[in-house]
Image 1: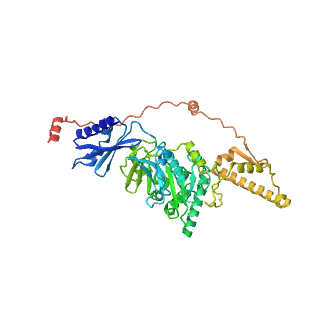
Image 2: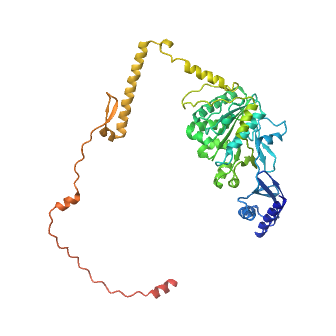
Length: 487
């Protein structure tokens, strides 16, 4: 490894000197996914000249990407490591001290190999937006944040609300004691849950309460906004604007956090952004909010850039497997539950307090299903209704349905006039039957009519008008014209 590092350092210095740039490699760091060289430039050398040589340095070292940034007196040259190592969450947590700050999820290791945590209750953090293309590791990073929060904070200090439209990211966390309700997989149910969160935020503002902390994790925020539209955008905006004072924090992930997707106000209220691999420099600028961040040169699969204010840090996200997530639920004393059934968009939902989390045991569910199957269907007499009154109500409902059916047919005929001639609506048997169409008239070929017309004698063509004799023209002197143009 030492010989490889010396060889790559010599390649960086040779490339700089070949472009008339004085500089030398004075040190560096080795992280699980990349190698970082510290280059000391001579006085008077512009930083932009070095950044323009990123492709040349990558070509000289034989790597597929090279990212150049500045840090204090040095210029950092970052290249991928030939033997990358994954960062596991559980071994990383064993190396941390026991007195960690509360409400601080673990992200992974930074570029210097130091564990990196973010404190949600800090004014500089508040809400976190994770972005990147498919395969960049957004969901894996959010899983590690959820597991680390649950292992470090009891339910009396932290509650979590998980919304997963893909039904694949957070389903293994069902049964955590910290959950307000089971993992939400229906977008409409997620809309109702965010409405509850906004009502709960207003209630906390009225009473001046900000504990316990409520962390809302949303996977694929853009999908929720596409399904629920403007209403979902307004809820996200209100939570990001007023949630920090009430102890409510939002951690959302999406592929491209453009203002047209999540809204300009909601986008501006995410002070902390974690950016994974993106396609182009334009997408990197949109995701990070900073020009020239170099996010398009990330390697993906857990390689992120953390932007908080004016600070930019490269990190390798921690990873937790499905078996480890289930092990976390069992270790904390939770039981696996079934996902909540989907609801209608306009259906009202009773408010559920976070102090009594929705955790049901499988035995209770089995007893409830058995009771529903064995119980007979109730009749009108069971509820004390009159048979005659219910008969009048049924006839009125049937009459109303007939009126609505006629109205729909009239609207259909008005919108599509051709249907009125092609189909006949019979109200007696409530069917739509095709009407016999008249046979089309015999088409007459115009060519046949033209052949049947009597031929007339051909008339002689009219004589052309006399042409006046043209005047004699003198030949053009092209040499004179050329000489005149040259003058």
